[in-house]
Image (cartoon, rainbow, N blue to C red; front, side):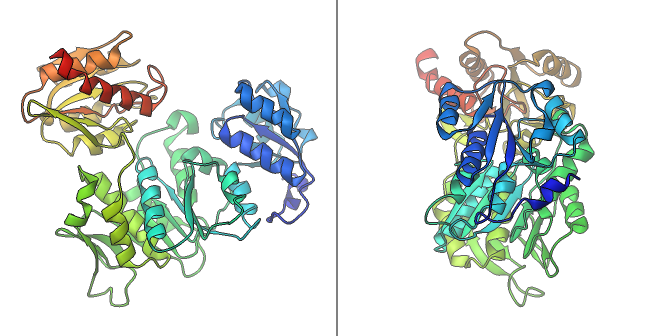
Length: 481
């Protein structure tokens, strides 16, 4: 290891007289540069693409911009350490050059942990998983807020985390959503409580292998203090919990959509209960809420029930009262495009789950309905959708295929379910035509479900744009049919 990097401090209130290379100039990249310049570091940002406004602001704050991300653009010997944006995969030539030079690599998450004492050092609650991260993060935030804590959700969502730690009033807790990209580069974060929600096939192209993806996710548990929260119904998360290197006294707490055993949070009939954070957990359970309290969630899928249980486990780990959790759950409303009920037309229900960007999320979505006309497709990211199609063949009324990898899906449907009506949609009005085709395939009692099992960037700006276009197209059916 480069001995220079052993001097990097763990406090805002120290000298940060360093030369730092920052890779990437998105929102997080700019927040890194802005923070380090404020601390007194000399910052050089490497980015092949840069929004004009951010590039101009970079000049204003006194950081240098190199409009390149090629390996030749950077000399590691000129820097004390580097901060890498999650968009840079380990295979990127610039990252490889940094790694080969033994220059230590950080993320904005690492810096936020080190610099969190600018006002007062908050406790961290960290969350990762292939799916459900954002919902669980927002749920946990809501539970702590209902308990009177000053808290904010950040990390992979919302305000850049370095902007959060510079907030003048400070926070009691940060609830930090972490992607596998962030965790790959991150060092120990020492959370009070950490949750690993689930693991499914995704992002293998970025990480290089299933093992590397799992190892990145499992880092969420390292040096946790009070509780590591795992999914009872996901063996990979249990394995990560068993192998975790945590602070002595830290407990492993399971969450489940079924009946919980001791040291778990789960469901007994229509009640969400805690058998982890009560004294007589060997023989009793504490009621958190009932199904009636969860009515505002709309479609209460098994996946969503799991997210609620995980957030409850995290909140209880840091002492949140059951009454506060119940109040938060009664008032909570999901962010858009997550199994969102859009409309009912002629007995057909239209549901937007554009956030289902991989097979695992689409599986949870499809499992929530009995008879589905499925709108699927996009960028499959090298993932094989065959097991997903086989599992749900009996519930499909029809399928409308969109996106870049239409040939892959079309061939699978032809081979696996040859009798299933399949429509392939291309062109500029993809979503309008897809919704129209789906409505023609559906009959009363069916659900037209947008759960693409694929990324959106081939045809849409992002999953939100895809979902918005779906909802607009559904509303437009009144004028078309």
